Image (tube, rainbow, N blue to C red):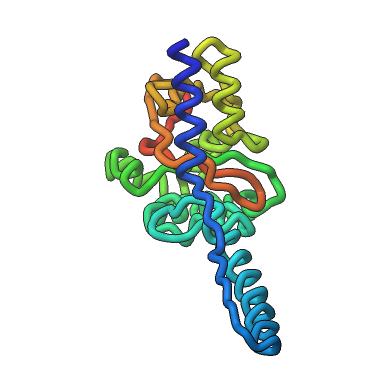
Amino acid sequence: MKLTLSLTAFVATAAVLSGCGGGATNTTSNTAANRTNTAVAANTTNSAATTNTNTAANSNPMVGGAPMLATRDIVDNAVESKDHTTLVAAVKAADLVTTLKGTGPFTVFAPTNAAFDKVPKATLDGLLKPESKKALTGILTYHVVAGKQDAASIAKAIEAGNGKATFKTVAGGTLTASLEGAKVILTDENGGKSTVTIADVMQSNGVIHVVDTVLMPKS
């Protein structure tokens, strides 16, 4: 029962974070028929424009102070987030831009700048050097799962696994998902843990889940 309640809470939390913006409706009543028709026509145009804007901007939660548009791909959204500048730099250094702009779909567990700050500076600086490209690629692709795993599907997998779900990463290793209350915790192959802080950031080629710690493949 506790697990079921936690799963429900996680999916509900993800849904709230994903937002559900809608356009405003204006009603204009005029006695003159021509003025009424003009108002109706103008209101219809404005409502359509507002709906289109809200659908694009509010279907996802804000990340790093920027709207994440579901019509953009993973890379194009990531570069807009001020919380993911280190991740973007790492993706560029590993030559993964073209891959993550591909059709996918991909599920990306995206570490924030604060997550990378937990990595010793010397280690991170070393990983960003050209000679460390292979190692950096391995770490970044360890955060990517083939297919689109949204909050609901992750919750379902955890429930089916009696509290744990294992996902194979593009790097070839595995991540284990579990719940602590309403939060999804990812455990890497070394026992390191990372929490999903923002779920279900939908992309044109998959979905991003923001995480607070860099996950490391088995060394």
